[in-house]
Image (cartoon, rainbow, N blue to C red; front, side, top):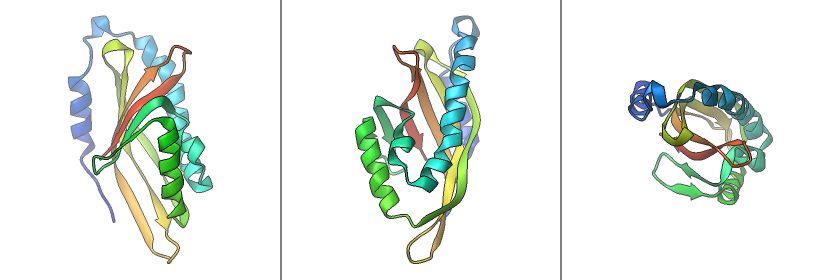
Length: 155
């Protein structure tokens, strides 16, 4: 099964939320990029390893993961539990990844990142499934200086 929505819709939505350049702090984008790149690069490895803690590590303690059906998983602990349950039903992760398409600085220092990603899996019965679709992630720098996901929406 393949699911895909045009990423340009996400880009347009993110641009609508941007702050005028005079109010933006471009150094926030540069400061957040390594954390965002690491989270995106580590995702497929964590999927292959079935490591629910690593999958949830980029989220803030109170972060929210919004699934494509509208369900909300609230809090890092609940996100860990969600990934544990999801990985219990997946056979082998064959490949995939997260592909960053863009990001912008928004009000109050929030960063909106968008892209597309997915994985190809082989279930326990040998059936291959590919999921693929866009995402929109909101990152916020915490009091400790760490960038974390406060909202992640998959479409």
